[in-house]
Length: 216
Image (cartoon, rainbow, N blue to C red; front, side, top):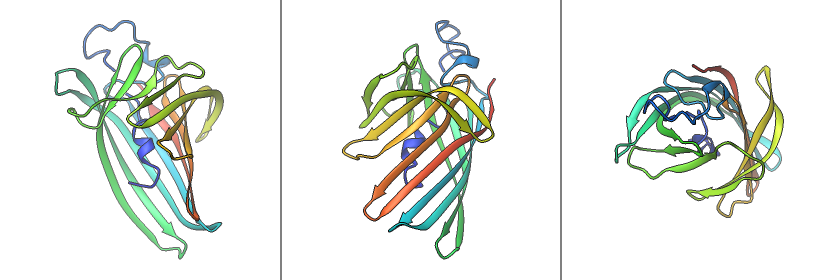
């Protein structure tokens, strides 16, 4: 896993109980949802990450990610969830201009209620509350050691598109003073995420942004 990517895992393609149960009419339509969850939804993202050593560029990572809601499953106690699969192609270039490439894939599970979006690493794992619904200014909560804060509304550019009035969700972990910012747009879910962290003499910057979405 790329440095700083564990914070991305929770958000990357925010997929619902609607359609699994045949009811849950209180859930908003997908075209207005802050976390669209429907089988067949797809998202493509791009990532650019740099590591500086003593103020000089040391490593650059570029990657493309494809996320898809591929089906449904059941938790250990029988509750329905959506299955989200992502695949990525990653290229690393060090300061000596030497490249290395690899691919990654991962499956996670999501459930959306009237008030929360939950993520499960496996059908038997405890839930991680990754988004409160609907987002409102200054909401704060803690889940699985991560602190969440709905900090602002911003107009955000991702790829060649401008997404107006996105909710900005800021996260921090434990005693780590650094933070990540994730922006959510209605009908798309996560459209951008940025992280800046310092490890001794190294500084990591990561930008992760939506390039294409197919929401059913």
